[in-house]
Length: 201
Image (cartoon, rainbow, N blue to C red; front, side):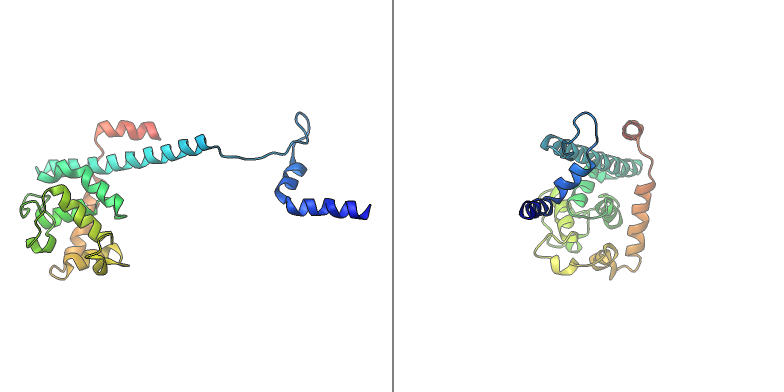
């Protein structure tokens, strides 16, 4: 009898979760059946899809704010708004970083050096094939994802990165970046997206 009791105790020690479920299982219909919480693959897929949808929605709102702000002043980079915020997101940068950088450096592409609206390499030796390539290059550099420039930005805060980028030449650089980013942040969301925001709430 003692051996049998010992084996029962071992079983409870090996399966503590099952034991707890059995002890807490509701009485009545289905009494005695363990309760198990499970997340099935289709539920995981739904959750992942919802997260992706929310992320995409946020990017659309941020891009719309940049586009409206740039369009208001007839700036060329208005048409790159989605690219600017998407590349910032890919490289773990605040959403308006690249748009603000383009504004501070070239007034949103109005005074760009060819396809370079970011003052990259002081407009020397930056032979970009497209504005998209320029955006991707600067985003990767500031995001510490470029082997050639990682040592300049690695481990730095966003403000320290801006200081490194051009703050030594311009003492107001960090202030200017923050000011422009604040303008994007408070820009009203267009009505077409406002309806989507309301629907998501």
